[in-house]
Amino acid sequence: MIKSFLKKLATLFVIVSFIFAGMGIAHAQITPACDTACRAKLEADLAVLEKEINVQNELLQSKQREGVSLERDMAILNAQIEKAKLSIKAQNLAISGITEDIGTKNKTITVYSAKLDREKESLAGLLRRTNEIDSYSLTEVALSDKNLSDFFSDLDNFQYIEDAIGNSLDQVVTAKKITEEAKATLEEKKNKETDLRYKKELEKNFLASAEKEKASVLKVTKGQEASYQKVLKDKQAKAAEIRAALFALRDTGEIPFGTAYDYAKIVSQKTGVRPAFILAIFMQESGFGKSQGSCYLKDPKTGAGVGKNTGTPFADVMKPSRDVQPFLEITGRLGLDPYTTPVSCPQSVGYGGAMGPAQFIPSTWVLYEGLIEKALGISASNPWFARDAFMAAGFLLKDNGARAGSYSAERDAACRYFSGSKCSGSSWASSYGTQVMNKAETIQTTMIDPIENS
Image (cartoon, rainbow, N blue to C red):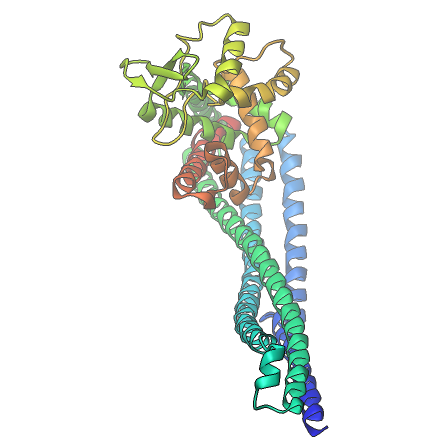
């Protein structure tokens, strides 16, 4: 009786310990460094800043409807500068809140990971003890020096251990679920923080550029409208020069940047993917093509071919079971010779066979043909024609998540465009994504902004 009572008491103690341990951990999870009052103040400050930003937006829209003049453009610059300053303040506040959330999630992961390790060790010990008790046979009972009451005691232990195992398994499942949820939320928070910091840097760069432009205009014009008209003419000349500059495309030569930008704007209207990012993808692919070269398919049965410029044999120019037949159909519809139409050469791993500026493999292109033709109002899409390639890339980037417009979303979309997986999938894909984002920023600030602000 005493042993049974002690066992029940011990079981109750174990269960209560688990409950209180869970309560302690839950308390650690929901007690952030920034308390409720702190969070409320952050949200209130953000709301005030957003109202002020909206005021500047309304002022900008009002001024932009007026005729071009020095006074108007100075007012626009001032509004843009003030808006950028307010945006930077808002982003600083938002980053502070997210940093607190990241700290809280890190603590949750640490606590529950440790709990998971402890429960696994406890479970292993309980299972070993169960195996020991379960291994008794009737012969051992009959021949053993133990009396029957000792064996009945072991049976009580067995029931107690089984109950403890069930409880421990529940704890393991709960701890594992909470840890995984916390890790997923942590990744989202980190991406959001990265996006805000990137946006903040863009705002800071824009602010510096706008203040520099304002100082330059005032210095040159000295407040005189006639002098400002000359400044405008210079800006328009620069914009025309940028539009006329050649923009390289893989396997199709070069087109004026203005034409490429016009294509990107049409794609953006259809897909929601911003023009600078679309153009950056094509700039990246063009540079990649220079280093990798182009090939011709020669054997439709094996997918083998040769280098376009060197004649070097390549075994895996195209995957025969997947891409050769779609490639023959695409070139046939367009009246092209499939054996003298350039495609990408194979890399160190996998196949080549990607077509035109957007570098779609044939089996992927046919999936998007209908969308491309409907969006452009054409009867047959051509992977080697820049306009069609831009639209194809836009639809794929949209499907890859680029429409969200944040730094992390666009970078992951670029990585998926290149490798089929997120940037975390490989360092090579990650490097590609980062290069695309750097190019997008350069294109926006040095090419698109001068055109739009001329």
